[in-house]
Length: 306
Ligand SMILES: [Fe+2]
Image 1 (cartoon, helix red, strand yellow):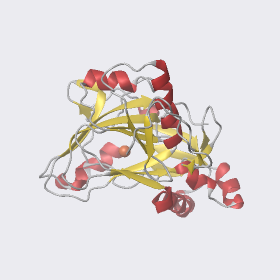
Image 2 (cartoon, protein in one colour; image 1 turned 180 degrees about the vertical axis):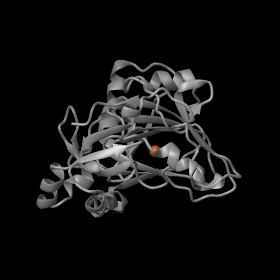
Image 3 (cartoon, protein in one colour; image 1 turned 180 degrees about the horizontal axis):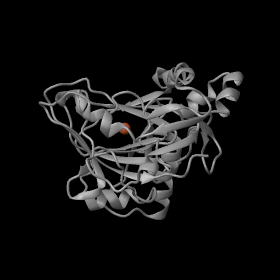
Image 4 (tube, helix red, strand yellow; image 1 turned 45 degrees about the horizontal axis):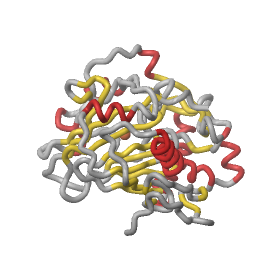
């Protein structure tokens, strides 16, 4: 494919990820599906980025919600330095830390381990129970299966925009109670070989593990609205019983499974991706066995959902 670096990209009238394709001059940007995601070439993330390149990377992130860089052999410090372009790094109470780096997490399934060690193999948002859930996750692959083990994403702007007017009005009045208080107790009750790998100790207080957020949230700069509902950590809608909440939640969650809202990314060692945890849902696809999958990540703290 010819390089488009240094040339204005001519994409007049092209709509992708629900909006007109932006123009990029400093980086090469190739959308992956019509719904979300783009591969970016022409950037070395081990070095600091100049202002114009960074502005284009951030524009690509805002537009495509998940951006993919290949062949990025980074040290943990370089990984963190790149992550800080998106905001302040945060720890998470439940996610296992990458040994030696409390501000990095790891997703690890050894070749002999069952899929159950990895939390949330269905579409979800990370840590919605926090007052300020993550803005984005910056994840890099160390070891991945030869085939399979992709991560899939669903664009929740599109999921919201395609609702009928009546449903939009109903969900815009909903607030969602999320709680992470019980995950350790619930995990302890499971059989040993079906327990999740969770972080054992953290400094979060009990009251920091439960929050109520709007079911429709807006981008703080553009104002674009997206559905912000996920079964992960879901308790109920505010003012609703759990029994009444469940069927509505199940329907809204099902929208992430519509293929026209999705993109999936195939990992290779040293693939680094940044995904927006506010306006996308994601899930790891465990369609492999007998191979190791090991990814390391940072988490950037987000705004309080509005
Ligand atoms: Fe996740």
